[in-house]
Length: 419
Image (cartoon, rainbow, N blue to C red; front, side):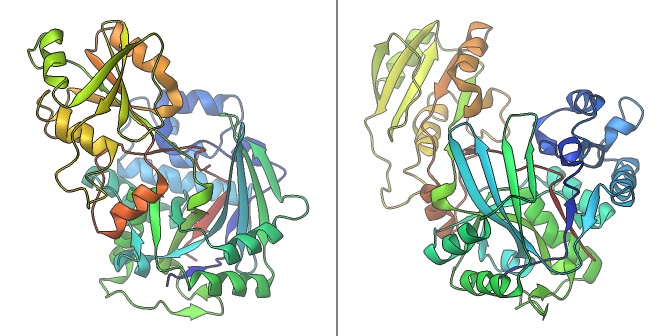
């Protein structure tokens, strides 16, 4: 069972939501963030990208930056841009990106569940990025950006959330990326109790996006309260008794999550000629020259773009362990059969010879990068959410950049303060 609880939220004031809500902090650089706030929108970037309010070239991981985040958040709360809920609440959320619709629940997830691995991860964190999130969260005394959690779809939870979405939304805002975010307040104690109870029948949740934020929630609690073994957290009514015991999460069932591919671009052929690479490649795949870009959806099929030409490729060799869901991932097969043994990219996490391109940017971006000097581009099929769950369930982690989720979760809709 997992503990999912209401919390005493700070909610963006509907009257100013269009000027506050922003894209996540990690999808733009400082220059782009400064430009985005200049038009009077995306004002939450003053909290999430504090370096835009410091002298040019300032270190975004400096104590001054974290203090600036605190000042910016305090200012938004004090000027009425955020409204503090008098009692614990949850929210139903619907995100619409073109024809894609994603429905979920905004709630407080349990740090103890994370520590005992009832909240499962599927990728490693980087120490520098984790420390940055620790220092930021600690400075603002709040979880100000959500962790994206998924779980195996449940009819009871789906029915409760659907019922909560009747009537007009409390917040209805369209962000700069064109994604519409609608938020419904859930403050009825009986409905909240039903949701808490329903999640007690969910054995695990899974971090889809936000590994550094969820890890930071655990570290910040240890920093403030000392180390403690995972346990059933104390509750006060329906909420966690201590705000440090929960973190801001948007929980979306697996059947509502949209996953896009994460493509690969290789800078060089490690001294090989292209013809030599093709000869080695044909030992593990069937290659077919095609007239248009390849955006595969079928398992074990990928696209290859090189020297102005697209190829459709199919793996011919099964992994050594077909019972292991990690080995069956297309990104794993690409790494284990091609990137490592043929191209010498043994550790894609650290190699400077490979870069990753989110599927939202399409195959045109792959063509552009190769046409401008890269050696190869691989267009991959998307990794399914059930693949992610199966890998996490056996305690494994996926290769880096295995999943790209859309729509992205917004910043500045809801904040989870410690107190």
